[in-house]
Image 1 (tube, rainbow, N blue to C red):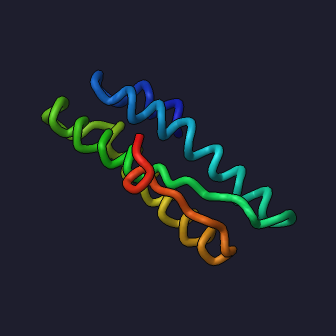
Image 2 (spheres, rainbow, N blue to C red):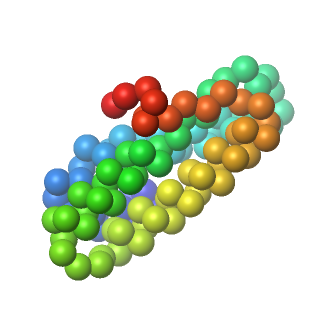
Length: 100
C-alpha cells in the first residue's frame, strides 16, 4: 500500500509520504518484535505525517484521488497499531510532539 501511495499522491506531498513510508513499517516491526520479546521500546506514530500529506494533497489535487483514500487507510492502521502498542505498554512517540 505504501508503494502505491508514493505513485498516487500528487507532487508536493513527497516529504511526508517518504517519512510515513519509512516510519510505519518500522513501527509495525517494533510491535511484532515486542509480541515475544522485551517491551522496552517505542512505537512511533506516523499519523501526523500522513495528516500533513492528506491536507497538502487536497490543496494540490483539487479532486479526490486514490492517494487520499490510501492515506486515510494508513491513518486508521496507524491508530489501531498505536492502541495495540499502548495495550502492550510500549512507549509511544508522535511527530506532533517530537518534531519532524
